[in-house]
Image (cartoon, rainbow, N blue to C red; front, side, top):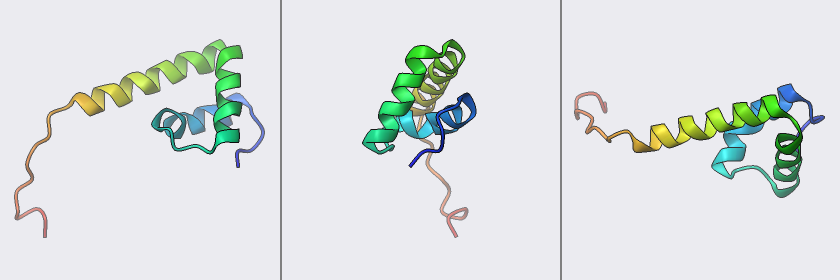
Length: 68
C-alpha cells in the first residue's frame, strides 16, 4: 500500500506503475495524481520512454566465463 499521494511518493512508484506491478488501489492513486500534476505527468512520460528504450536494446549473449 502506498503512503500519502504526494509528488515524491508518486515519482517513486512510477517505475512499478509503468511496469503494471502496482496493486489496483495504488494504480488508481498514481493515475489520478498523474492526471492532475503536470510535473509528475512529465516524469511519468520520461519513465515510460526509458522503459521503451530499454526494451528495444539488442540482447547480447553473455560469455559463459562471466556466468560463473
